[in-house]
Image (cartoon, rainbow, N blue to C red):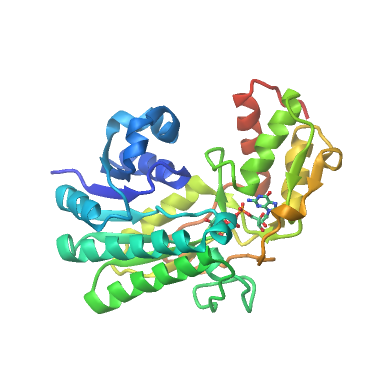
Length: 329
Ligand code: G4F
C-alpha cells in the first residue's frame, strides 16, 4: 500500500516541525513548502527540521505566488494539507498591516483554490487563532463565540477561517479550521513573549545580560504545549466530516505569572531584572483569552497533557541547556 502523502505549509516553524515528526511516526510521506532562501541557508532556516531533514521532501515555493503553489500541489497530489504558514507575529502586524493581510489572506485563498482545482479530495487544515476572538463578549471562548479581532493579524485569520468554511460549504471540500490558543515550546520563535522570557532568564543566569524589557505584563493567555496542539490538527482531518474546533487548555495566566514562574524556576527574583517598556505595548491589546475546548475533547478525544508549570520549566531548562548553564533553583 502506498504511503499517505501530507503537504505542510509553514513546515519550518514550531508547529510545522512537531507536526512533521508526528506524521512521519505515523508512516506518512511528508512534503513541505519552504521559501527558496530556506533551502539556500538550511543551517539557519531549517534548524527545527535538522533531525528529520533527510526524511522530508521540501519544495521551494511561496504563498505569494499562485503559480508556485499550483506546481507543488500538482506534483505532490497530497491527501492531507496542513496550512500553517502565515505572518504570525501580532506586534509586527501593527507595523505592516498591508503585508500581513496580503500574505495571510491571499496565501490561504490561493492554496484553497489550487486544492479545489487539482486535488479536491485532499483534506485541508487551516490554522485559525484565538486572536480571531479579540475582545470577546464571553470567557471562555468556544466555537460559537463572536469574533472581534484587534489586529490585522486577527482580521487576516478571520478571513482565512471564513474562506475555509466557504470552500467546505460551497464546494464540499473536507476543510477544517483549528482555533488554536497560544501554544509554546522550546522551539518557539524568540519574538514571542514566552520564549523571550525563557531565553532572557537563561542569558541572565549565564551572566551575559542583567535585564529583560517587556510590554504589558497583565495580559492573560491560555498557554499550552505546541506538540500536543499539532496532534489535534491531525485528529481534525481524520474525522468523517470537516468542522471547526477550539484547541486550548481552559486555564489562563498573566504574562507576569509566566515571568514569575520562569525566574523562580531558575532561582531568580524577576523584580530585580524585568523592566516594563511602553514601546512594547500594542496599540490594541487583548486582555484575556481563555478557551473552551469541550468540543475537541468530545469529538476528537483530544486533551492537553502538559501543565503550565511543566511548560515553563521545560522552556527555561532548554534555553539554559543551550547556553551551557545549570538551573539550580
Ligand atoms: O507571545 P505573544 O507575542 O503572542 P500573541 O500575541 O498572544 O499571539 C500568539 O498566539 C496566537 C494564538 O492566540 C497566535 F495566533 C499568534 O500567531 C501568536 O502565536 O504575546 C502574548 C502577550 C500579549 O498580550 C503581549 O502584549 O504578551 C504580551 N507581551 C508583553 N510583553 C509581549 C511582550 N509580547 C511580546 N511578543 N513581546 C513582549 O515583550
